[in-house]
Image (tube, rainbow, N blue to C red; front, side, top):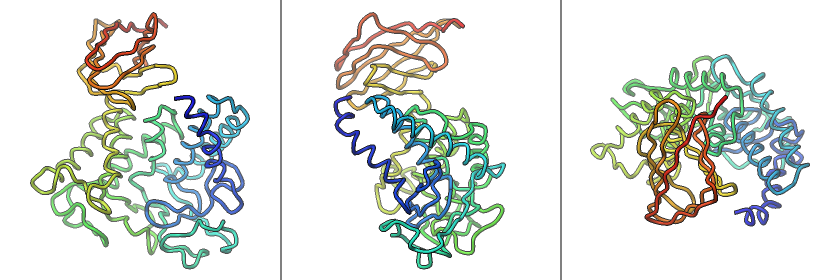
Amino acid sequence: DEALLRRLWPRVRKAVEFAWIPGGWDADRDGVMEGCQHNTMDVEYFGPNPQMGLWYLGALRAAEEMARQVGDAAFAGECRRLFESGSRWTDTHLWNGEYYVHRVVPPKSKDDVAPGLVVGMGAGDLTKPDYQLGAGCLVDQLVGQFVADVCGLGPLVDSTHARETLRSILRYNLRPQLFEHFNNMRAFAVADESALVMADYPKDRPARPFPYFGEAMTGFEYVAAVGMLYAGMEAEGLRAVRAVRARYDGARRSPFDEAECGHHYARAMASWAAVLALTGFRWSAVTGTLVLAPRAGRHFWSNGSAWGTFTLEKDGEGAFDLRLSVAEGQLGLGAVRLDGFGSHRLPAPRRLGAGESLSVRVARDVA
């Protein structure tokens, strides 16, 4: 809905520019969040870190795309500059050879922090902050990349580093069972259950790390698992998903209530991104383009206005036959692309309603 985007754009731009206020997250506008960063751990991180830094890089990429769509070329260029600068810096300075780490950089005084940014735990003495991530291997340190993958925004950091990070999360954060696991907080996984814990400290643990480092919460686990699926690590990603679902199997816990801070916690909805990762589904209402993975089988799809199924059947090595069905809603379609394989553009845009289907043949692109 381009009219909606144009109406929202001034506020979207203002929201991005908030990162650059004096004493803010990226006050020096170098693409790196050095400032006081309140986050979902209910604490403030001080200094560059992967969790907040990749969120920011993803936001810059999204803002760049939106700016180009509405014709704000200058702002798009600034977002691109900051993204490229921040991405390079992150790979150069936060990558430790196995995963990305947090460089704790306390402010010199509270006057260096913009008003309103300090609201969480552990900020009594800003020059000596408690509850930092530090050198820990965080389960969702690639959360910004997770959302960028869902939105089709491309890599935010070096893809080789990102894949190794996912391997490190399996190496350090995965607990095949939890009998001997230390957790000073809430118990969402116990005893013989398997889980990806929030953070592991294979090298150097702060005296007082962020409070939830020993917990296991499904929304965070899904971020890592779906990241693995997008990175082509299907067996590893599905292993992590199965560990979660085994804990919520209907016997031990409700399969419809993956609790976290409360029951029916929203972060568990990240699980649905696994459908996107496995099917490759992306949708652009602007261009009417449907993107799928070249993966044979029958799959579910859903966007903001419709849902249904599609079936892909391989026709030799050179083509796929696609049958797209709409169960509810309406879908406007102009083109289909099988990612990394080939494309098919319809002679004229079609609008499919509930109960309607469309069959097309997608041939492999000729190099």
